[in-house]
Structures are given as structure tokens and as C-alpha cells.
Length: 243
Image (cartoon, rainbow, N blue to C red):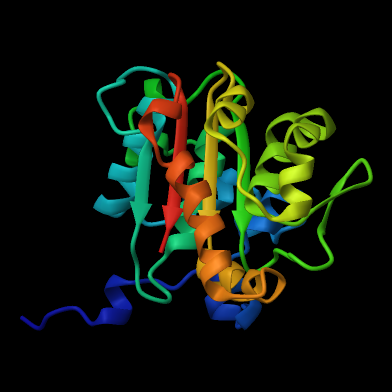
């Protein structure tokens, strides 16, 4: 008796058979998902999770983060560091976290990824900083006429809008990290997910403005020290750093 062939065991999806997949379909962009203009395969949580394999690493990440967001376990660290090779799925994991924080509306295969009771049922604030899209010279348009120049400027606006940005505006424009108390005020008492990606790219841009790589590194390090200090975190606040 002969063994079945790979083509008999694995039936390609229709879009693969039709040859309708473009290379750009594989370029996941977290910023597009947050803005709401990403391709449907990434923007629609139903399609996203239907096309996502529940690896052990992804399941562990989703469960741990959602436990923090729902305050079902405060013994977990509020800080998670993702370390992957290029093409290792870090952006895919961040998009999965965004959909999970938004409640995974309409997703039928939730138990494949995490226990259903861990999915947040209430609002979760999401603040993401992508160093590739950051613009420390010209500022990045955030809305309401606000242009943010630094990670703390973008995060402040994402968490509390124009009023939140006003708390750190001088720090943002000067490129000087804000204090720990200011960050605690921004976090408040609401479930919050903070995502940091491509910080090394941002640092390479920022050091030109700061006149030296050392000065730029000092300010970014000061901010990350505050952001990654567990004492700054209230229940339900999670920070994800990607290397």
C-alpha cells in the first residue's frame, strides 16, 4: 500500500489555486491594522485567525497578555519581550494581540488560541509605536492637528488624545524623556496594551536630531527604563517590546 502524496493530504486554499495572491499580501503592517486600512486578511479578525496557525508560542503570548488585560492574573509580568529573526512572525503576533484586545469579534475558533473567558469583554486602550513609520524631524501626524516626534509623544496621544499629548508636549518637542509620574498618569486605571516595534530604526533616525547617537540613546533608554519599570504599571496594563 502506497503512502498518500503531499498533494493528496494538503489541499491548497482557493486563492493559492487561482494564483490570486500578491507578494504584498504577506507584508503585514501593524499601523494599517490600527488605522483600519489594512488588507481584509489582516483587518478582519475572522479571516485573520482563520488563516493563522495556532503555534504554541502565539498561544502562550495571547493567553499571558490577555490574563493581564483582564486582571485574571496579576502574578504575570506586565512586560513582554519578543525576540524573533526577520520574518519570524513578530508583526503577525502583534496584530493577533490587537485583535484579541479588541475582543476577537466574530471569531469562531477562539479556543484554538486561548480560553474564551480570557478574551477582554470591555474596552482596551491600544497604543503602538512603530519606529519605521516614526518621523523625529518632521513629526508624525496623529490627528487633531497634533504631530508627535517621539515614542512618548505617540503613545501619549494614542492613550488620551490631544489632552494626553499636552502632558508630554514639551518633552516630545525637545526629545527629552518624560518622568515616571507622567507615564503613570497616562496609564490611568484602564486596561491598556502598549506595543513597541522597530526601536532600533527609530534610534538611527533620532540620533541625527539629538546630534549624537549617545544622546539619542540616553533619552530612549531613560524612557524605556520608565516604561519597563513594573512599579509604573497598574492592573490591566501590558507593554510589549519587540527586538
